[in-house]
Image (cartoon, rainbow, N blue to C red):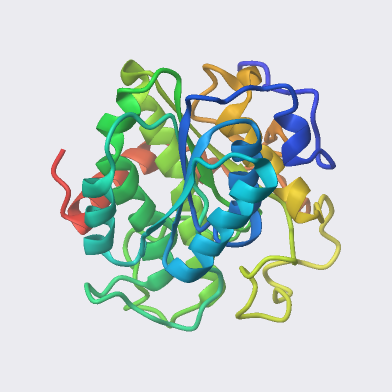
Length: 313
């Protein structure tokens, strides 16, 4: 077993701290869902380090406002907004078609959590479609742009919620069993990690590194707008290791994986608190589940995602 990868940073580190002294001038980044919350803080930190940043979001008015405010506060006027609806494969295709030139950093940050039962026009369960399938299609569509950039990085925001369940290969859309919003969320977050595992393997020869992460528990964002608090089954009594963070702290691991030279060449890894995560142990609300790193699951999900998204290759 290889030694676990660590950095000097931890749970209380902020996005600015992990990028302190790093010059990202000349590097181009896309951050999905960056009109607010963790995505916005990640975009701001990357812009503050000199990167050109595109905020990709479903609602253009908040995205444009965020781009203007980030440009003002960082004095970096290479911050843009572009429309992207991850539940709409047509929107993803248009975004990809509009992108020109190399892409150094793709942060798959956008997400929804524990939504009421909803489906896309294609019949996909909405959390799986948005959190995983949309980002899958986006990353594959931008593959050539990533391959054209030196040291390209894909950063995938998952969650400790993945430990509540694997990908339900035989019932992805909850047609055989009643819909459970938390199991649907867990499935989508496990899928995020499996995507990172398989993309890291497939794209290593292209010089693209791909990692996933748990940002920690941050209640200041809009992610929890559908809930008051997690149910007991999602956050069991007595569980330890819960990491409650500010937005600045929650964005630190994303910023580290996106821009720090400390993680150059590290790929296919799941991080939390700016470190490679330990294996999940029951009763400890942290770590990574074995099924989320399983190479067979990762290949199976990749092939299924190609089929569901209509992508060839």
